[in-house]
Length: 438
Image (cartoon, rainbow, N blue to C red):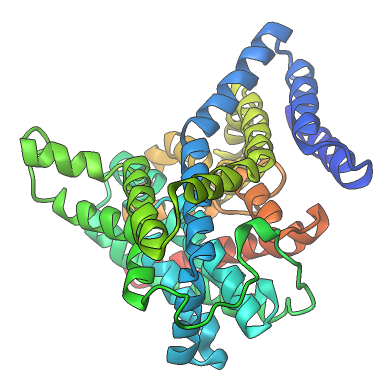
């Protein structure tokens, strides 16, 4: 019965948004309340759960998306995005442009949270697509596939790192095996799948890129453009390495750990961008402030939509749906790797959060490692692959993609959700093949 209620709730959500064109945030709250009460929660508990879900999602994302929008606006308005775009096209050629973005997304995705990488890279993708007149999804989806796979499979991302600890896996081996599994998944879900999507060519909202074509003199240098746009990657990647060798309680260690926080890294980047892409380019502080204000104003509804997804996710967790599903699957007599992937996949589809799906699965399947002797490193990867399965309307990432790329719900399911499914299934296949040799 709990699963039926969830299915009905999700169908109602799609109906309200897709058919009746009802406001997405209000639809989320209405469905969250309905699902919570139908699952046996009292109204006050439902209200608290919704507040908790919104708070847990927005506490981090409101700052990251806000700073990301500001950075994207400055990178676009200064001509830095066009400079990087022109350089990528010159270096790789249009024929191999997809692979350039895949490589960029993969490198950025390893040290950086998915949402941070998303908001940094999307303005660049829009500029590249506009410059080359190539279909937007054909250009953008490969990069996002790389970001998604690194988020689900590879430490130091939160869920894979926690799974390494929970399963007693070796971090180095997990990273090596993860790279072996991740590369084919990215290729299948990125360049190969996106080559079938050329008919989809949405026009992104103008706030996320600058349609103006800059002259060479108007643009900042390539060095300044790349340094500023990728400064969060530089800071987070550098500190991730240094953290392995310093004492966190020392003064130097305290500074490094502070700089390794994504919010601090983004804040530093915004301050630097104000000078490198603003003041140094002749902009007044009034113009810069107005640009930053416009950037944040224009993502307000996106923030509310993601908040709504967080509310529904929390209702599903607090009502015990994820535990109910997990209990029903844990005694199935199949390979522990397939079972682990399946449990994570079902929880992901029902709850929405890849992190929640991965960590919930870990608590259920941990005994299988000692009982079966299966590789704990492969269990980490099987869990991570399952946690990416079929992102849809209860996942904040789904709505980020939909809103930034200006798609309908139906189009987002046919593109984003299918891509996530491909990388999830590809990951399972890769894990099973590795298991034959380990």
